[in-house]
Image 1 (cartoon, one colour):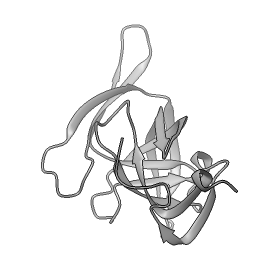
Image 2 (image 1 turned 90 degrees about the horizontal axis):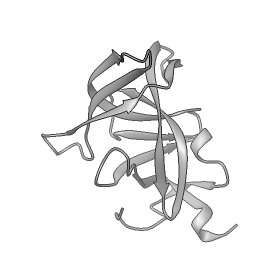
Image 3 (image 1 turned 120 degrees about the vertical axis):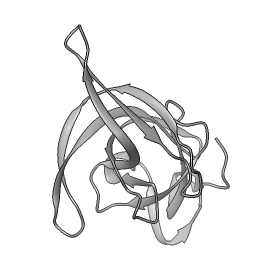
Image 4 (image 1 turned 90 degrees about the vertical axis):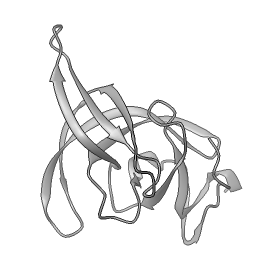
Length: 144
């Protein structure tokens, strides 16, 4: 397997449609869909019948101020947490960059403030990658 198709259990994830900086993300093959920390999530129905979601995204746990963004709402999913609690989460489709690989992915929005990592990269976003659970940052340093 090529080196640029190998990821560790922690990598820098860049969401160019949403944030100007990479986010330290946990690679989680146990999670089907990727999840992004979002605050002040608001769903709005537009005049054309479509729905959009606005939310505040943070690229670091130490940043006090996040970036307010709006995206088309793809739908919602029931997601069961690692402790078995089911919640309904909004889902958006956005661009994810891992290393040099760009792809469109589904991401659920959820408040992950108590968690160590603000983003989980789930297995649907990891197709074509080999995961090395004993290593970190195989795709390189923090860069967009």
